Image (tube, rainbow, N blue to C red; front, side):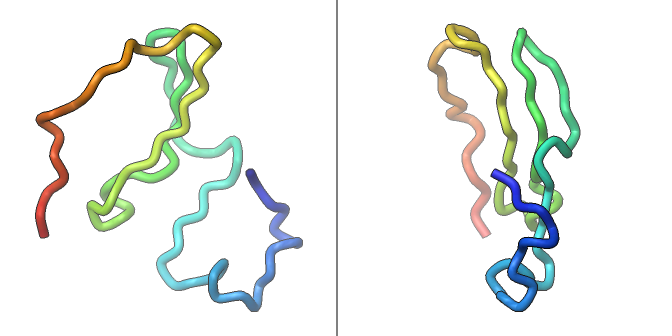
Length: 77
């Protein structure tokens, strides 16, 4: 979902906070891997190691099989 800049409520603090990260639709570092398209919207380095966010475009029936990353536990602060 994206909103035209002119339609955003500029006086609403939920939309305009210091340190906010805004990545418009169609923007971000995009890579093709294993038949899918991945766009990095937020890196851990941009969120004080809070999280990373990747948008995946996967064709029907595509993508990796169900799996887990047990050795990728969140770091404790």
